[in-house]
Image (cartoon, rainbow, N blue to C red; front, side, top):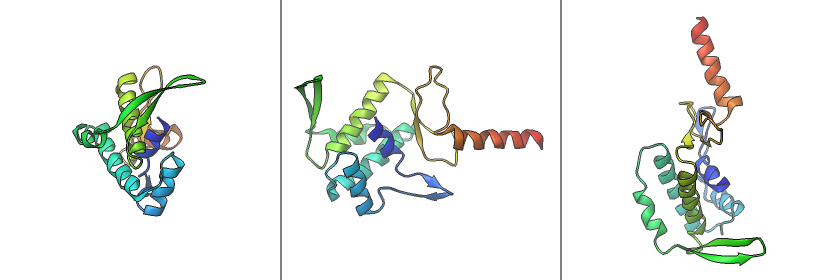
Length: 159
């Protein structure tokens, strides 16, 4: 799930400017390698496409249908390890990381429905996975976005 949130949050706004970790091919390839990918240009392009589709889905702006072609030919096989059973993703090398990210999204939606969401701060583009018991987390960071929103509300009340 860490790769899922990292991919969704790879295009934040910093001081009002978009900072895209997958904008530059060299940076995107490095990002992919850090997350277990092969760093190929094909993988880089597929990760950008997957990120954009997943962001639209999580924001409620699009359906999951565009993920279908990505998952064609991908499958999971069981592997017995010293820790027990593990499911390994089998996909073309350039698509494996994107497929694993989509599978992480699907597992999150099944196990924690409605808990993967965009930050409630309209000036933020980050996403959060709400693990709170009450399912009331609204901001990607209480220290940043939550504090700003509370300060805005206080300012409006006191004016």
